[in-house]
Image (cartoon, rainbow, N blue to C red; front, side, top):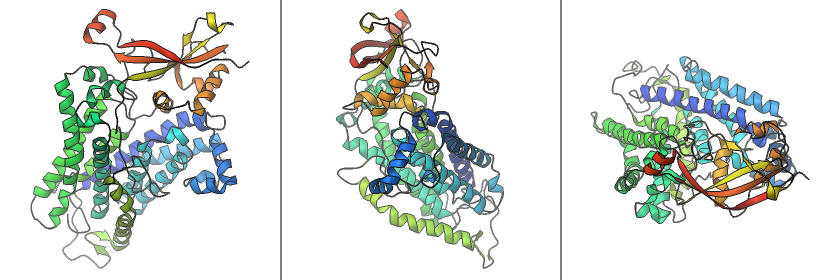
Amino acid sequence: MDGFAAVDFEFARQVLQRGIAALYLVAFVSTLNQFRPLLGERGLLPAPELLDWARRSPRGRTLLRPTLFRYVRYTDRRLAALCGTGIVIAAAVVCGIPQLFSPWIPMACFLLLWLGYMSIVSIGQTFYGFGWEMLLLEAGFLAAFLGSEAEPPPTVVLVLLWWLVFRLEFGAGMIKIRGGREWRDLTALMYHHETQPMPGPLSRQAHLLPKWFHRGEVLGNHFAQLVVPWFLFAPLLGLIVPGPVPAIVGAVAAAIVIATQLWLVATGNFAWLNWATIVLAFSAIGLLGIGAPVRSPPSDPPWLIDGMPLPWVVVTTGIGLLYVVISWPALRNLFARRQLMNAGFNRWQLANAYGAFGTVTKERIEIVVEGTPDEDPDAATWREYAFKRKPGDVRRLPRQVAPYHLRLDWLMWFLPLGRSLEDWFTVFLVRLLQADAATLGLLARDPFGGERPRWVRAVAYRYRFTTRAEFRASGDRWVRDRRSPVIGPLSLR
């Protein structure tokens, strides 16, 4: 690093800009495919009703985060146009087109992505209430100030990205240490692979590994999240200590973060949380003299500082000072006795607190939704609705879907954890009784081929992975037993 310019971090910038833009592309495609049946004009939780409440209520105006739909009336067509615009801009950045021009062009592109997606998250209610939404927003805002290929990456922005990874990893580590006892007695991952929200194709194999391996996983997780993040800042020592050692230390720390995240990618489906962490960790990988732009002359013209235009230095420095101010609540939260998880401290979703899985559920309860065309529900033959990736059929191999986010499937995992059923679930059952095409499109299979059932119900089942012997005997990947009715039978009559 040369003061304001991180001349050896061009490769990191390329990964960051293209990788973050790729995640925005996935997020906008996911929204285009799912927002309207979930939150649109006839959605399970209609966003127009939330916006109307916010306009009428002083409290609503205060609580509603920034969104373009505060000023432009929401329609499903406008939502689709917003997603289409986001997809085009994100694709252009992935291809590296805006980066070929002055730094103001990629800055404008990322700020548009940030504001556009924030407009969606702000009205997304429970379907957008995940920590990786605010992570993507903050990453997009910071990526706006990485510049273009015309000048070296700004040091201050890379430091802010390290600070983001630190909050993400160290915050998750502290949540676990303060959370369930299973993280302290090293048993958490004896359950997690089986009970996580959406298992992947290798989750069962990971669950069946020996207990000593699972204890090692937990120890490795604590090391990667509580110790390693401190070393992400090592490249800063390069400003004081000459030589490659600081950069190597930072790169090794980033590599450890990336390796642990790849294991999570292989054994689960956590939308873009793991992929975003991987992309952001590349911010600490500096390749000395490789891929760096040509250094500026020893004596820069007065309008250049370390090869960067003076206005750009002023803007990026201002962003750094802004973060010094707004990061205090997040810093204090990391060491607070009652640490908040996935919390925002300002309306713009910047300098957030992150964390996940402070406790691990030890039993997997699945809500199975069934319907029947029969008149008498007590003597009926019930047929099961199949979700796209949520466990259902005991023989079906869980599929890899991340970084794509199946929001309905994820919310179904949370249902048994709550004290009462969510309002959206009752509306969902009504939509099934109506054979609503948009709602059925969120599912993998409608057992009635688009016809209306007479009755629907929801039943709780306990699921567990089969052992190797059970799988050889039956071919089933899950064992399930019925627990209790959850709701219904319900009929439109």
